Amino acid sequence: MNEAVLVLSGLDPCGGAGIAADIETINQFGLTPLPIVTTMTVQNTQSVAEVQPVDVKLMVKQFHHLQADINFEVVKIGLLSSSVQIKAIADLVKGKTIVLDPIVKASTQEVLLQTQVISTLKQDLLPLVEILTPNMAELFTLSGEKDEQKAIEKLACKWILLTTTDVSESSIEHRLYHRAKLVKSYTYDKLSGNYHGSGCTLSSAISALIASGANIELACKNALDYTYQTLLNAKNIGKMQCHPNRMPVTNINDRESWV
Image 1: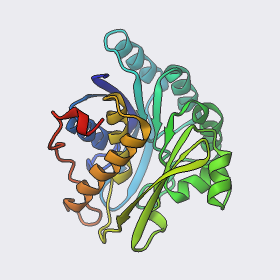
Image 2: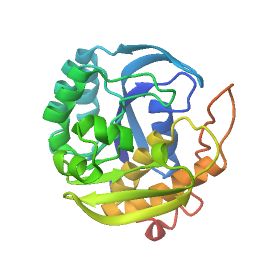
Image 3: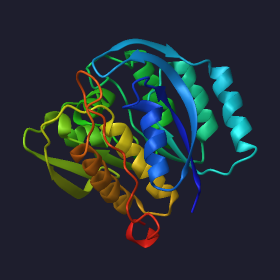
Image 4: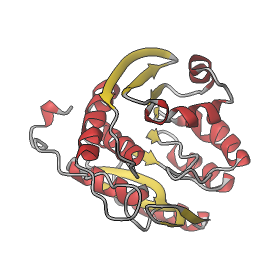
């Protein structure tokens, strides 16, 4: 078991998504998050007003300084904001177990990843990723396809957990693919609320469970269950989207039940 997970993601000042969500989630699974901010944002529960990449040289220094002191094998990546940044991160994390939440748009629908940056992501980072966690819109944007199976086949990731909340109306079926073949599906009732940070919660929970020793299938199942519970108990702190309530895993000391 690894005790720490490196997190590379954006800063959401309202705390619902981004690196704040990653830190909260990983902590609840009893692990230590090692956060490196990739992107500064101006946002709240209603909108994203501005996005500003963090200096790549600073991020590289942070990575090397952490690695010189702390052992980590699992890396969770969220919002990325420039091609230069993606290339640098890809060089840093080669050989690590990478969980990538490919954030193309904010949950309030502002575009966060431009076309050229998406091309760099596909070329330089996707081939290194152990598991990708797109929603349907992200899958189609990354692949350039409008058919689910063709889109899955086009992306060079070993595992893809496709979340379908963005296209489902009542029952949600999330689908786990291994080398483009469907291996598991997970069904939940769709909740009526409008949520901010569910994707970050899910991918961070997966990364924490993998670092704890879970295989991919079990990590996805338990992370989906955990994320659903955070939404069932969501908090409304602003005027629009609710925050997932990332509570401690109740039986965290019973590792066998999670991993």
